[in-house]
Image (cartoon, rainbow, N blue to C red; front, side, top):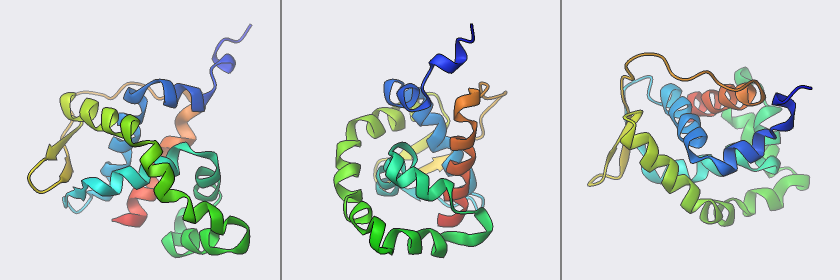
Length: 151
């Protein structure tokens, strides 16, 4: 029997803020290519896009080379306009989980949080990061894609 198929990727993320901390790290890795810090508030909007199916499907179905413009255009079309309007509500709903993930990432030194300027910077992580579960690999690549678009 294959046990890895019994683990739902969404359940793994929602149950474990450590996984979300690594998703944020992968986002910041591409976002901070120019060594610029990320506004803390942006992470609260990035996490619903990576976690909630309505948003994630749009992200997953947009190719990297299409860019952020195509991604936003897909949000604005008639079918998903309500999805765009719900983003602020979903960001509030994910607030606790995102805050826990940011705290864990900061404590584990994946990234640093500048509380005075409300900015997050990526750290040079010593050693190797843990292996990404097969069920989540695509989501980690898409976190990097979103980071490169918003850089």
